Length: 443
Image 1 (cartoon, rainbow, N blue to C red):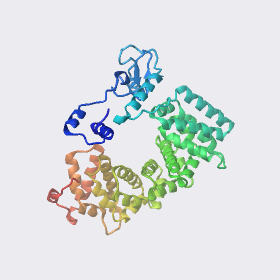
Image 2 (tube, one colour; image 1 turned 30 degrees about the vertical axis):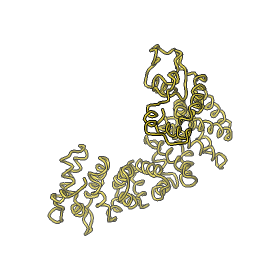
Image 3 (tube, one colour; image 1 turned 90 degrees about the vertical axis):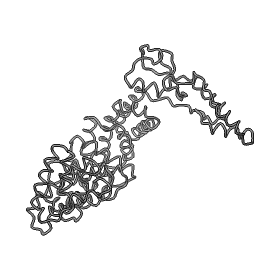
Image 4 (tube, rainbow, N blue to C red; image 1 turned 135 degrees about the vertical axis):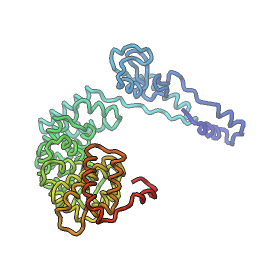
């Protein structure tokens, strides 16, 4: 409970002199003894929020909640079946613990704060009912006050947040967002921002919640939020859009909203935070993996290919995986391939990512390379993609992939790539396999 150096420090203050070596030895053996009834029977630590079960045994709230959440419905001490799961705060024990902490503050023990009583499911239900009623009346001011109450409760502790989420908060707030998103003026804009700040707790939303947030009015308002305002407002809007589109719902409708694709491109080009950049790339991935080739062509015309290639030169694992996934999707159309051919770093970067970072990065890199190389013969350019890939060492890396193993789908693509490159090996200067023995790091 208390470290030895704190004991020595407290005694030096009291005595006003440096203790001798013999005193140090005796002090090291001294410990502050915590009364047994102050200890939680589960964690054996000093209780910070003591609660009593129906069996009359007192535990620390955090410990007993973990016990119950693990599927145990008995009292840990008596092993009696709990008649109910109600946890009654033991204020008497808590005050005794606080008094003991104050009495022993000279040993560096801090007084435990008075815990807040967690929100109950009944309280959440009452607040949500009030929000639904205020929404039907169109009272955005009352709705905003109620949403702020939920947000404040959720910020107090993780238990409150779980209680809020488990009582259908996501669907109610999504319905309220849909209702006030259709208001033409900006009178309810602050309310919408408050809702978007709470919604990430409830992700993934259920079908009902996604149907409300996926409406044309809701999507348009969230797109407008991504283009201006504070960082948190833009981030929360992107997170909500990502959750709506994650199940394949309304992706085409979202792409048809004016400025939606341009807003995502800007968030990647001019990042405001890591979370927003990653979420934007995920949304773009959802769009470019759809069957609509016009969406992929539009992103290519915006300059997304060259932007992602430059990002891939130096990026972390998460960004790498998402950016390569997007590139692989865009390379499914002619416009995307042309942009890839025209960028001098496309092939070197893709080859460099093979067998690096993660298996997903390797799979996307192989898939993107195959799309570029398969269409190489149709081009009337002096610069051959196959030759460039061979010179960058792709052939040896692909052979190594077959040796170390990969998924069946990736293996088929690797085999096809090797066949294409084998025809060009006589015309290109390849890196010999012996050269890899001197590499100090894996590739």
